[in-house]
Amino acid sequence: MVRAAALVLSLIWAVSAPKPDVLISGDGHNVAVRGRDGRLHVLRTAKDAFLVKEWLAGDADTRTAADPSLTDGVSCDDAGCVVPAGDGWLVAMTLRPEALSDDCERAGLIVTTQQGQRICGAAAIDRDRLRRQGALALWRRGGTFEVEAVRPRGLDRPWSPAPPGDGDTDLVISSRPAAPHAQDATPSETDLQAED
Image (cartoon, rainbow, N blue to C red; front, side):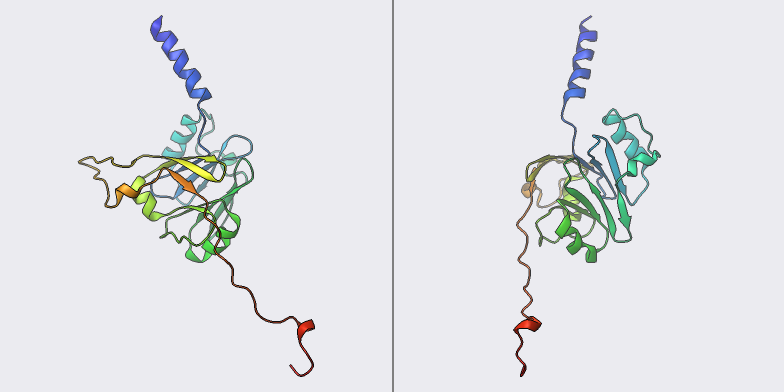
């Protein structure tokens, strides 16, 4: 009787626990974003059916890893992918460095396997952070993301030693102020005089 009650309570807790807004694989090649419909939508450069199956099971989602609805709202090209999240902010998976500036202007969160560049207002998950922390689950809280990492700060195992610089791993990602844009100093045609 006690075991049954404990099982029911754990199921109630699992259903009522806040679900992450973003899931990121340890290699950064798969990202799941909770859409406006409350379901996960997947950006991926590598087909990892096992990983997606586990994410769906953890979300109590009965879809299969091959379900076409997983990519509803996802827009991709050779430079990356973008998908709107639940409240309309965008998550971008940037595949090429030249796409970073465009994604910086539009996205609230950028995931890239490149070395991150801290030049824009979007929160960023880059290769170094993935190397330090592994797979990540993120919850959006206003302008920040709370992070739960597979390898949280200080976790040091014989088979998976903590990387150097592990002490600076943070559990909150904030959007940064956008870098100032250079202003065009070319005078307009109406400002030019005839002798100019």
